[in-house]
Image (tube, rainbow, N blue to C red; front, top):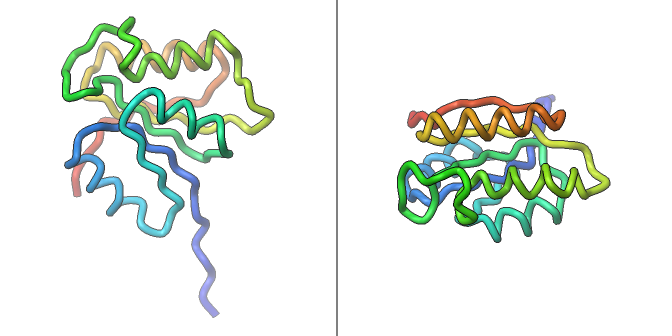
Length: 126
């Protein structure tokens, strides 16, 4: 009798096709939802319970975006922290996988100061 593996619900924000394809491979067997922009991410984030939320900062094919740009991953963090955790759900673990080290650090600091569990882990390809 084989023990069944736990399936995680994963929300993955990124706009780079290489990372998206890598995530599809990495999360085989999990319930993976991929989003490519802030609007989609907020919609899905509010629609379900998530175990893990992976956030990229630089979106739209751009690199090293300003942390105040409303179309970058930090906008998710700003929304959550300004409105509070608006859903009657457990908080997910946030994994910041941005190559933008400054933005990743800022995202982590803001989320942690609002009692979220956060990990910074640059995306690696197998």
